Amino acid sequence: MKLSDLVKEFGLEVKTGSGHLDREATSGYVSDLLSDVLAHADEGTLWVTLHIHQNIVAVASHKDLSGIILVQGRQPEKDTIAKAEEEGIPVMVSGLSAFELVGRLYKAGIRGAEAH
Amino acid sequence: MTKTQEMAYEITVGEVMSTTIFTIRPDQTMADLSLLLRDNRISGTPVVENGKLVGMVSMADLVNALGNNEINAFVRDKMTRTVECLYSDELLVHCLAKFSKYRFRRYPVLDHNEQLVGILTKGNVVEGLLKKLEIEYTQTESKVNEDDQRPAMSQLFQDVIADEISFCLKYYVEGQTLKSAGKAASELKNALKKLGVTAPTLRRIGVATYEAEINLASYTTGGEILAQIDKGWIIVQAIDNGPGIPDVERAMQPGYSTAPDWVRELGFGAGMGLVNMRKCSDEMNLTSSVPEGTRLTMKFYFTS
Image (cartoon, rainbow over all chains, first blue to last red):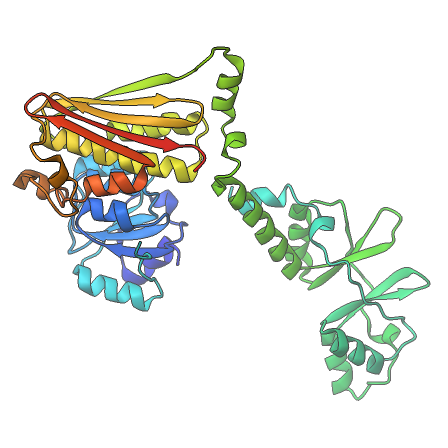
């Protein structure tokens, strides 16, 4: 599923990377431990997290993730926005909690990144 | 421009058309057409008379004929006479324009002697693009021929004559703050990308270096990331000035962490950093002494 479709369907607020929303979210991963994401997310994975600091952009960039969704309406920090724009990483915000959001993403056809 | 659009400029009609052609003559009947379509599982076909293309006839024409009880009518009376043809050496991008202009489902393909050589449908185009995408994907992701894919680096190693060649990139990492942590890893990654290191290896090096850099920033008074690039491998070292790790063996255990709260609050310090580094690198070595400092060495082979 394309990020742009997810934005429409779940009313996500696009904070950065609006020019990269044609990317395909090939799988999903939810975690607030950055090393865990580095270990288990794949190229193209959509990452759901509550972190708003700029290190999430580095993680997304190193793993070639398709995008990041921040939950509970949390707004990215200023540095995060600047870095995400620079690296071309879409950061989106959802008002839902992680559990609710992931449930809906799953229902929309997105499956977990393969455990490895 | 998307990758697919780009490829439409590289592929010719002849490369993707289907060359198994069924034809019908204008003096055959619509009943003959129905058998031809059924037996070959096709939905339309060119009408050819004395080797010359004179029209196209389709399932839609057959359905219309059936509705009017004209199953025994001649093909010549039911076919479409204005035919849009393509040439086998035309680029796909031109035929895509024709597709949206004329909205026919299939186009006869001619060579420059006006001989019918194939049929092109949207299905052929999609299949052709997918095949090309797959080939390009395999080429970029393949590890086997990685040497061929590092033009910048291969060139350097070819042009410069020495018994051994290796060069170093050094990045300084500030300690006790995660503010700009990740900068060294991302700069190294960009440098290697420019040198032509390809996706899978680049990702491994990027992730492992990032974790090493996070450790320098979280636990030490500062240090450096040193990347030594050789013909067949790269060695990344993270070297700091203390305080050193008292129990290296324990530090290597998954889940073991001494991270302070401020590190954990930022989502690090789960005791997985060293585990990730070992997983990403081909060889890893960690030596440390208290309070002098720690040296982490990771080796990545370009062909693994």
